[in-house]
View 1 (cartoon, rainbow over the protein chains, first blue to last red):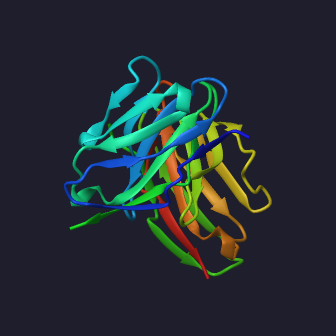
View 2 (cartoon, rainbow over the protein chains, first blue to last red):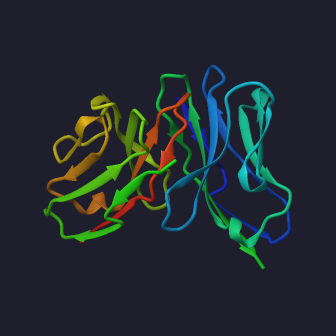
View 3 (cartoon, rainbow over the protein chains, first blue to last red):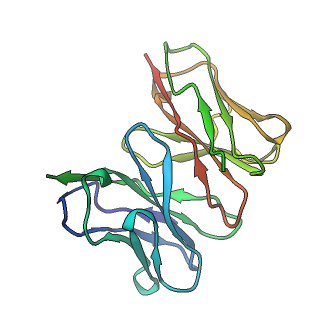
Length: 113
Length: 113
């Protein structure tokens, strides 16, 4: 079955430490890939997206993600997290240009002072 | 861009009552989505409009949920009658560009008692 998997439900990292949030998908062709962030009580904000081309994409707030076709992954990274990065992060996939977006179940990020 | 406005931000009702949510998307964005986000889960698509026509309502519980998009701009989502399991955040999103790049409103948090 087609799916988007975020294997980590909750991650805690220290402020200033590096971060990697995992996302795997199971679709036949290369889908369109997104990462969204949701702060408490807020809607989703787009961090970055991958459609084609360079597999390392830069986003807002210092985030980046790398598309790895061989691993069907699109992991989100940040070299040094800030306390304001504490939020819920959602990976999302659009299997084809006319398809609806499918969200993962999310990873909650907590920051340790 | 003007963003996606939603109202109300919070609503508390008793089961079997009716409730309506309103969404005003970014001007010129032809596609509008309603999502249901239950606590601890990713958003689930309820209905997608293209202008004022329904594209996908396969996951909308049509016995109690209804939605309309007047003149291809504003949209309302109604629940009648509400059940306890309808407690969730209802998100509206708009897209008008390439490949389902969606912009989300802040959501309406519904609590059914």
